[in-house]
Amino acid sequence: MKRLLEGLIAVNSSLKADASRTREDRVKDMRRQDAKKEYLAEHPVVRTHPETGRKAPYVNVAHTLRFKDMTEAESAPLLDFLCQQQTRPEFTCRFRWQVGSIAFWDNRCAQHNPVNDYHGYRRAMQRITLAGDTPR
Image (cartoon, rainbow, N blue to C red):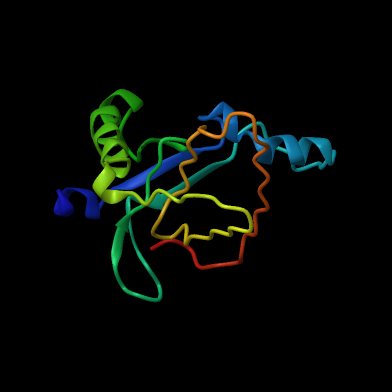
C-alpha cells in the first residue's frame, strides 16, 4: 500500500464539500476580480513532514476529489479506504472539552474531524492559519 500511494497525486476541489465552501464565499463577498467558482489544488497523496521527516497520508473526505490521471469512479475505492482508515478509533484522539480548554493540531499530520455531540451548547472556534511549506 505504501508503494502504491507514494507516487500518487491527489486532486482537491473546494466545491466537493458543501460545509467547507467558505473560501469562495469570502472571495465573492469581497467582490474580488480574481474570484473563482472553484479552487483546485494538486498535492502528493503521501507528504513528508518538513520537521520530523515522517510520512503521512494527505487526503481527506472534504476536499479530495480523485487521483491525478484517474476518474472519480476509478479513484473512489482507494479514497474510500484511506478516508475510512483515518477515522478508525486506534488512529484518532478524542478531545474532551472543559471550560478553558484549548486545542491545536498540525494539519500536516493530523485532521480535525468534529463530532456534533454538544447539543445545546455553542461551538465557538477561532482558526489561525500559518504560512507554511508546499506539501512534498
